[in-house]
Length: 201
Image (cartoon, rainbow, N blue to C red; front, top):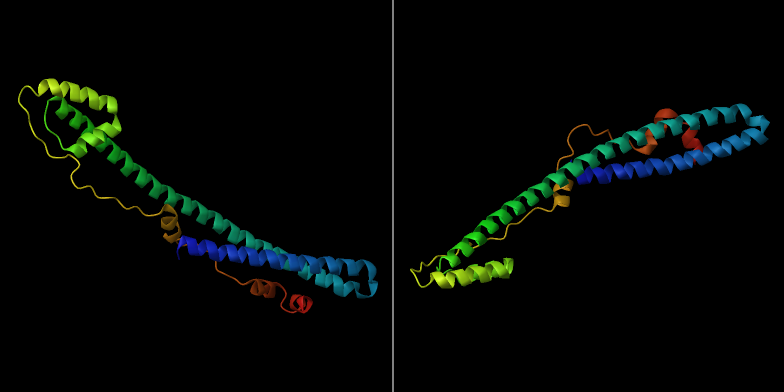
């Protein structure tokens, strides 16, 4: 199961358990009120109250289990997100270092009085107009001597495509250890199959 899918599924479970806990808590409150004002049904109400409290406890435990798993999924999600972002930053840093080396080489060639492609001169201008002007001035003096001609250092550049970190994190495998999905009704039925279902009707 993918992390994004697992997060959606378990968030739904947590919400369903929270909703059912509210219903059971209201039922428990009503039973406790009846216990105060109706001594005739005290024994029956005490049994119902105990069952409802056990049911609330079971729902709490299951919801906590799902919440803990969601927390682990969030950690995994962040790890995948950060790994993808770091990869992109590393590539960007490497490209920047390569571009700086090329820009310095273009400036050196111009300073030697060589002919460089217009696109390379433009990149040097965009990086630093001051460096470009210094290179051109030094190059003008060197042009009186022998001139060399160079091909562009950038050549045909391809745009790199990167994966979206959010998409990468959501589509990564959630891995083993996911708690079993148990419907709210099944958790309640495991505690008190008859009493709670009768109360909820």
